[in-house]
Length: 300
Ligand code: GDP
Ligand code: MG
Image 1 (cartoon, protein in one colour):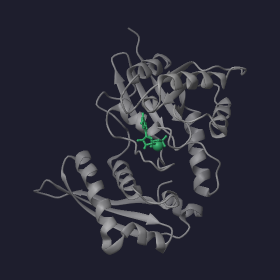
Image 2: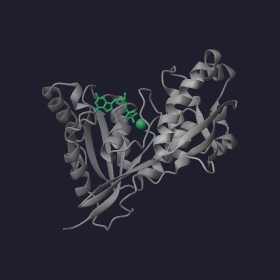
Image 3: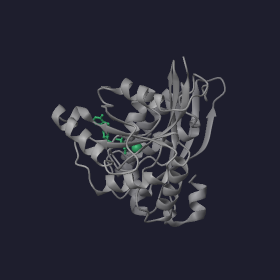
């Protein structure tokens, strides 16, 4: 039996289900999901282990037209990620018509001739079978008169797991022959610190208005296990751009911040396997998205 191992990256408009699909394939929560667009900021890897292969998923922030320095940095990250992967999987949802945003992304894929290209029709649980079939035809026609065709087109539901195994098999088959690249117990090569920051960010974004997601970053000062105790102290900062946003995050009488703390602490305790004392501080860094020095400090 030959073994295949390599890298795949899911691309597509915000909210098409890339993070959810990553989690479903890996079987553990590694990439944050949200109903808000563009909440994934780093290239997070999830690793799918199979008897015949190892699929390393690089979850990119999504390709979009840059408006700020942060937007530009994100696009650079996408470019350097995609130049590197074995398979690029373009995701589009079954329940939305193909639009200019999808075409823009598919055109960008020309720049990466080395990678095999797969189209994934996501969220098939949301529509009737007939609609899935129509979407499969529409996505194949996107490439009909071009010099490259999709290597595979796969419909999938990350929610019900329908076709999930078939998708994993199809992706692994497109990877180069190679021994495993990561140890078997690895699900992600992100640090605990990265994952904790993402959990807090996810909790902070729950139920907030559109403008805030871009203006929110999380840094971790300290993760310290207490001696003689099953408790870990975590000190973290939530950064926003304006005082008004600070107010939104803290909420009336500190209520929202408490909720953010309670929700993220549950995830952090599951991750670390200990009880957690979580200290969250909300700080204002004016215009951090445009400020190169601050971006560096916040980890971008
Ligand atoms: P991303 O921005 O492409 O990473 O998208 P997310 O993974 O964050 O998903 C965006 C939204 O679509 C979330 O509300 C998900 O719960 C939802 N979603 C993702 N996959 C599925 C699916 O297979 N079925 C359904 N019904 N909803 C999904
Ligand atoms: Mg995402």
